Amino acid sequence: MNTADSQRLASALEAIGYEAVEKPENADVVVLNTCMVRQSAEDRALGRLGSLKPAKKKNPNMIIGLMGCMVGYKDPKPLKKKLPWVDVFAPPSNPKPIVDYVISRQIANETRSETDEFVWHSGDIVLPKNQQGNAVSAYVPVVYGCSHACSYCIIPYKRGAERSRDPEEILSHARSLAAQGVKEITLLGQIIDRYGLDKEDYPKLPELLRRLNDIEGVERIRFLTSHPNWMTDELLKTVAELPRVMNHIEVPAQSGSDAVLESMRRGYTDAQYRDLIAKIRDTIPNVSIGTDIIVGFCGETEEQFEETVEQLSDLKLNVVHLARYSPRTGTLSERTMPDDVSDEEKWRRFRVIEKLQEDIAAEHHRKLMNQTVNVLFEEKKHRRWLGRTENMDLVFADSEKDLTGKLLPVKITWTSPWTMGGELC
Image (cartoon, rainbow, N blue to C red; front, side):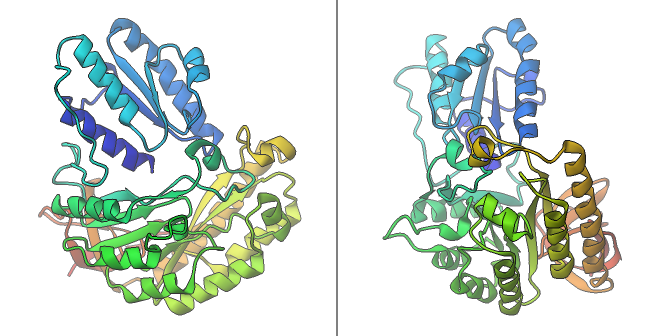
């Protein structure tokens, strides 16, 4: 979501006369777009803001902006007091305050007339110049905020209540990206399956996918992140039927322990999650599935952790996004539950699952040895072309030609747990 927001801001700044530079210290405008899902992300943002103070002192006219979860939707005065060298604050998914502030400074410095208008377009988007011609994939937000409120999650407090984006805006956004050469779009929402449920006259996610599937130039469509409670049979059948919607599903489990899931306020059991995975695999041929796991949640015992290990061992999912629990100020778990698993133990559990998933991923990839898969190539990396399969597997291949944005068959000739390599057919 922050990537999409930053892209929109960069495009807007270019529209009022700015251009990107390589080093923040050389910029007239520097904006940090922040995440607070984990403590480490917040710490990095604060550290980066601190590192900009010398540049600001050297160039007092530098504009420093802060946006995203660290700002949230509350009064930014406490942040301004804490970070006096930051000039302007903007909430998540709304870069307008930053652009308005920059324009006001241009007017004050007489580099812009008050009569010069800048019009926000909420649908169409012009890619930033450094992405034009080489952006193969792009994110399209469709649900902002979240109203589910898992006990550990800061998102509802920082990004606000769930609200679906106008479907015509979404379609316009996707069409404008396709017109600029983007081949793959990923729809974003904290609980993407709930798209349209807050608006009676909006289509629901299956219908939105059908409309996007008809857009010329869009070759691949993905969506994330799903929630076990909201993934419907209709959605799964739609994924199976539509040729441009990829057969990859991101549906977090977070834990394999019913007791931990209840403390997390996830709203389902281990058995229900396992049943859902079986249904997904029965409905969508050759599907790949990703999950999220939090280790070391409040009160998680060794036995409860082993239930998560057992779940992952049994289900053998394709991807596991791992996190160590860190309390976020203001969440239910931070206010009412002790963070009683040591950092050392969190790391141990993290590495146990990391090793387990490494073996599972290696097994999945070995099955593709000598098979031919379709790869959408994105960029050249380490002198080889890198792309993704329909299942999100990373594949390297050699070619003297420019493969940016090309969808090509590749015969897999080597595999590892995290990547594969092959030869163009």
